[in-house]
Length: 239
Image (cartoon, rainbow, N blue to C red; front, side, top):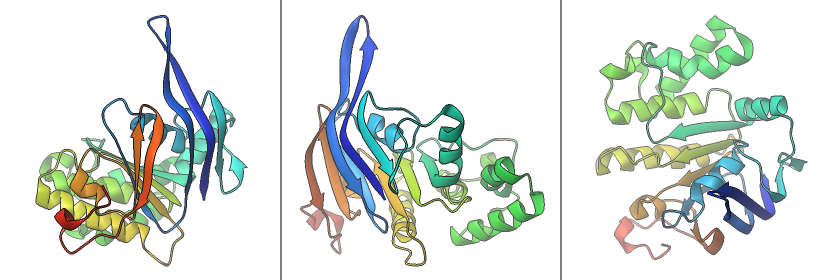
């Protein structure tokens, strides 16, 4: 689905050049739940931004289903993000004046403006994430876990083949975080879709619940290992 070849991303900082990613090569397959881990400054967020076309590499290739996305125009990049990628953020990024279903519907409303269709689809997705009875509630009336479920439903609104999650359990307690991990795994493993979920996390237990763990250090891939989630996360040796 997504192939990065010799990707380099450099920034200018204080008159110096900082290489955030240094020759990264990786392929992301559909039907997989992938975690990206590593210490602060390793390049995790930079990599996630490149996968979602929020940024462009300094050099190298990023191909999505065989199409190069690193040199798209701004308009085509925005269209790619709207239709091909769903984003889930640590701080939820919900609009406080909108109800749960309205927050979920935002991508469809931006794309088509079809209010009735958007509401129907948003209601279906809220049912999928277990929040059908909270459709009219605003974010202030929801718990952290419920807000993250709304955010996940919103990420699925355009039925994207790629879902990118940036520290999705970072603001949640361990039990709620485990529930969110189960939901993300179910989304990735849905055999009726060809979808990949890629997650950046500092949470080692969360990473152990994914299918594959990519470890970054100093902008390079240090390891790339399969991970078979065990009955209890502490028994895993994949991270």
